Length: 244
Image 1 (spheres, one colour):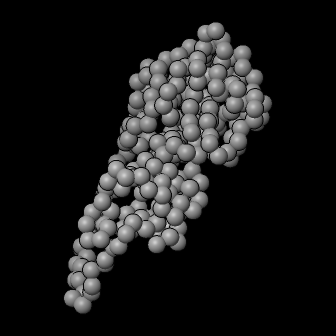
Image 2 (image 1 turned 90 degrees about the vertical axis):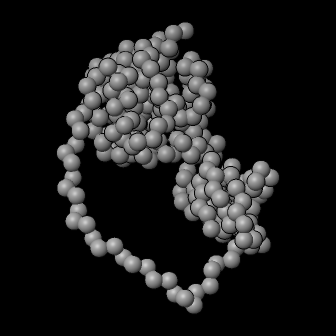
Image 3 (image 1 turned 30 degrees about the horizontal axis):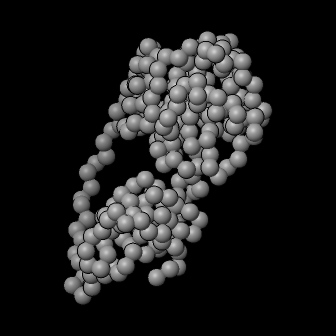
């Protein structure tokens, strides 16, 4: 079945949109497709792992939650979220439909953003890219073959301030770090951060951590409620809060 036919034929159970957000995100593909056809807007399908993928969280925070993107979306897009969570639960019907669309569009990585015209015909795709909302909007406009919004007026620079001069306390003692220790877990469920010795990491990030007066390369694999899975110089470890 062609992607455009499948998209318009699908009926999902649940609310048509996520309420209370700057961009109206639909979870009902049929409603979104009908609205795009009626308003002659493009369709944006966001294939996301909202509660486990750090790159999906970054795309949401750096682009989708920004007012610049909301302005662009209101004029040109009908946005649809197709979520594949590991902790949160979707309805059985929505899981089936999301799985069908993954196969139709051959989705292999998250996030993947598919762009369709108002009749459900694919135009192109994009994933996460750095640069914030402006760079992302420019790439969307290129794929959609539309004119990008004008560059915002430059902000007047602040008057340079006299730099602060730091005078170290000669009596201070350098901090000594012992074995790898999980000192804290912070952030929301979909954007957790951990403090390991002197370094703060999110899942998927790597940092040099001070351990016994030397540096160890630590890769953060997965952050749980009370523990974190890491590799230290390639060796897998599980660090737990309160463990010494």
